[in-house]
Length: 295
Image 1 (cartoon, helix red, strand yellow):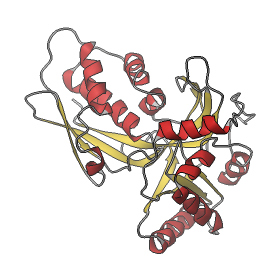
Image 2: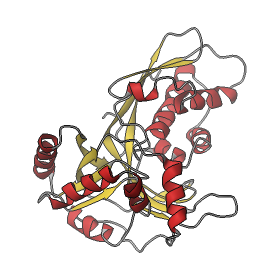
Image 3: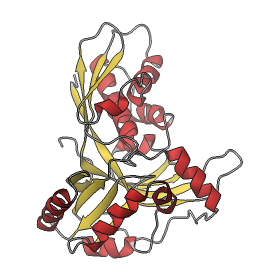
Image 4: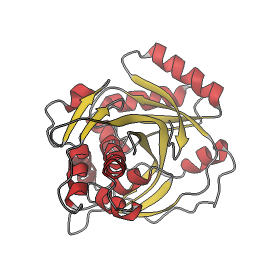
């Protein structure tokens, strides 16, 4: 029986967003990878289905009675035959909230496997991924937690090109950014991009090649997010000025940004310097790729 699960942070290496359709949804194209840092979930005794949150960012979820973990568990149990024993889930919230890291979706994906295995439910990976996809645009990708190219609303997934080891630093200025607000600003600007997948090789031979290629891609939500939270611009400017940074960009709808580095020593040095320079920022050294079952 699975007793604990890891929920890795999601990073959008690029994010191209198109004009909204008649249904109001934006088509997108994104290369998503996952970090070896994230949240952790564990089972605990409970009288009723419940989620208890602790950890560095637990206070950001205080009073949130219907978080994605609870919704995922409820949706899964609705597919089970007959009554099920109560399940208690303990969430160690190590990732910032509303940060462009897919934390809620990744937590939900981990919870689906955790509850399925704990209760021995006869549901395969495809069934769980369908539940995850119903919970949000990042749901299916975060359930897989392996590098993917996401299209459509985020539900059409295909394998990513082979990637080199990606040593990186994540930085969040400790501001929360509302995804709906970012999209409203994006729509107001009217600068909609193409969402066909950009030409890409079957494999990137080095981090330098990957960084150079990313220079021809975009995160279409970066500019509207910076407009709403100028601190994101401060992070990007700081990262792009450092000698260890090959490439820096915002992930998702913000506010977390990432820097790709030539190797582990450079990433260590960059993380240490940024932490010393801006102790008020959340700074984490990590490796990107995935999956990370034992991280």
